[in-house]
Length: 228
Image (tube, helix red, strand yellow):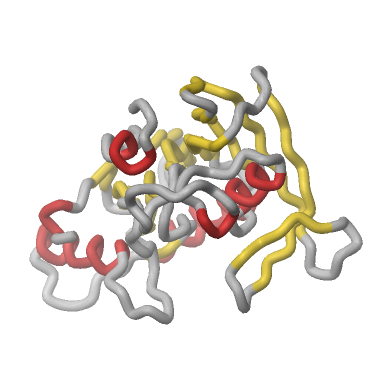
């Protein structure tokens, strides 16, 4: 993806929010692949004609196969304040997910103890007394259904690794394309049908609420065979 195709959702002197495509890393890993962070820095350098390095603070992360709203901080003070909002759980996060199966109507809460295996980069549901297990909670409701699949609106209450993916899969509702957690394959092996639709934050320097929104990707119809 070139800098020209970077989709800017919000920008001021303190924050930069961009649309993350599925398959793109938010920050670097062992693969050495180009990241959304690299692209965002390049975009800022070009826009403001900055010859040197550009600061962007990472305040949250999305898994590589997930799309949606990605937020960075443009100053260290903003980075600290935004990161604290994520740690404190005061950021409102809304996801959409197409899952295999038919969860019940109504609003439901899922609460589990999750344990991450860093060697395999997977998370599993476990017992409360398991060493290293962390409490994980989310709410969801069914938005629509199609051919034995369901579109969910998901509100994670904690920020555990892979929590939406593993909590839904553990109930028999794996996300489309998410082979790691037993989901059916998709036409795009780099994507799963999980999308960070919105983030609502307190602006780091102003006493205002900021809602950042990115609608579902149109490509989902082709990738997952679902209505968009």
